[in-house]
Amino acid sequence: MSLVDDLGEPVPLHGCPNRVVSLVPSITEAVAVSVPGVLAGATDYCTHPAGLAVARVGGSKYPKLDAVRAVGADLVLANAEENRREDVAALRADGIPVWVTEAAAGVPAALASMRRMLAAVFGLEGDREPSWLVDAMDEWSDPVPAVTATAVVPVWRRPWVVLGRDTFAGDVLRRLGIANAYAGHAERYPRPPLSELRGLLDAGRADLVALPDEPYRFTAEDGPDAFPGARYALLDGRLLTWCGPSLAGARRVLGDQLADA
Image 1 (cartoon, rainbow, N blue to C red):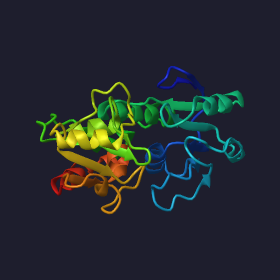
Image 2: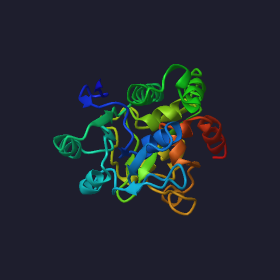
Image 3: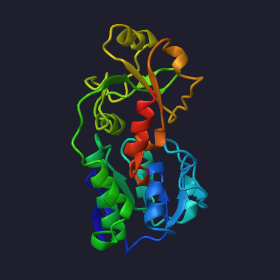
Image 4: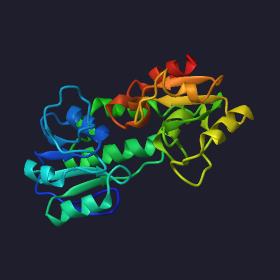
């Protein structure tokens, strides 16, 4: 099959792949749930579905390419933001087809990307489309509500990294009525000093700190301490940042977590 991925690169497959390596946790979950048995390898950070028994090939940013090759993959799945171009290029140079998904700036685009990949690569379209995908697309198609809070959204500490412009997680929050204080920043993941973050809260330009438990694991004891007196919400990072089966039902759970702030 002559296919083209989200970045316009050819993906030369010889029929439907049956030994797939995923270098993206959210894609791993989506493929494992939608096409059981096809995954042969995944990263060390691919934690869902629980009990996934496949070869582990290192991290997303720094996969062990020899381990990927050893799996005998007939397709590797990657993402333009999470994986390095040089690793994708090296695998392609070895003759391994790689499908790269885009770094989607919002929920509709991310779901459309997933839908296209599952249809093109695995033939999951029409009546075969995964139920979780149908449910997620319906759930997140609701009108965007009015803004109820403006949040600073750290995703890392030491140094502090926050959500900036055009991020999937930022759009998830927007669709829950939460504006991102850094949505207009030039960078997707700015690194402001803590004093700047506190200043936004002190000046009333933000009135919430949203703290997901991944990629950095913020907890009640690690995160709120940096913003004394500020209103904060502890969020399920997988529901906030993964485009996959977790999106079906995520709206209610995240809404409840924000309501607890």
